[in-house]
Image (cartoon, rainbow, N blue to C red; front, side, top):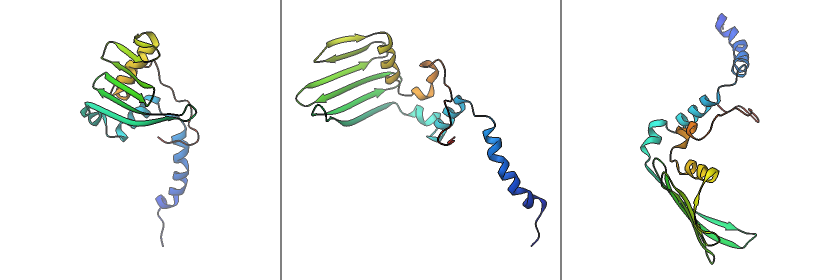
Length: 149
């Protein structure tokens, strides 16, 4: 069997590839962009106009069980209701401008400041596409336990 120079150099090249990849971490923005592409791409995200999430909740320490229903509509509207049997329900929403909440403990109220900012971010149906609107920076905190990009 005859080996070419390429075949004999291939193992050494393969050993250098991980070193070259580790030499410089990718930019965090690039990691976020790759995540969007890996999950269907920007165009696929933008086709989604509404979302409904349902689930059940249990606070075992308090003996409470309930349901959760969350509605979101592009670009930034949301309504969430949590209904605990025996205790009533808590509702909150964001209409693109006003963030609000209603529950049996506090009654109705308008959310302001950081609480409004969180409601606005949570209402954004495509926040991952325009994270810069909600966060000042993004940084790579580490690569442990392994590199995954």
